[in-house]
Image (tube, rainbow, N blue to C red; front, top):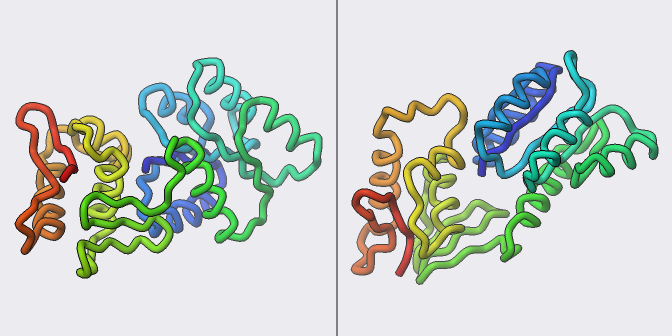
Length: 222
């Protein structure tokens, strides 16, 4: 899942980014509103985390920009503004949730998970395809009775494949949701990670689940 964090306070941005990366999300960071709007206009995000007080514009203006473009991307506002009036204004401008600083990181993560679930129609936290199981809360992956140890990027890739099970996902779709802005579109890194993942998921199994669709991309299916 790919997230945009818009936060001008570098220490706070580093803290949130580190925590989200540990939870295996792909993160882009914008320190200014102008940069945030550019990234929002060119990249599809699964969630936008937005500070209200930015050096060049307000978070509310970015909120309005997103909703005026008819984007339904969930927006979580994180800000020191804690008055009821500010909360109401943020929600009225199109935010889906509002969290005041300082906050518990556990609560923050719970709200992130809730907003990402809300965007999906299935609302599930545990995904299964055949005997493969991925638990988004514990980050545990099992096939049959075998627990599979994955790197952060392998987990993120599998999560995207299993959430789109039985559908072909292109390399572009994978790069947009699993990698961040630093991704090199000319590299073969996606194919490399798919092969690593396939070796772990389909190892010792007579029923492969990860399939290559030549000229199109990949599909996870029975």
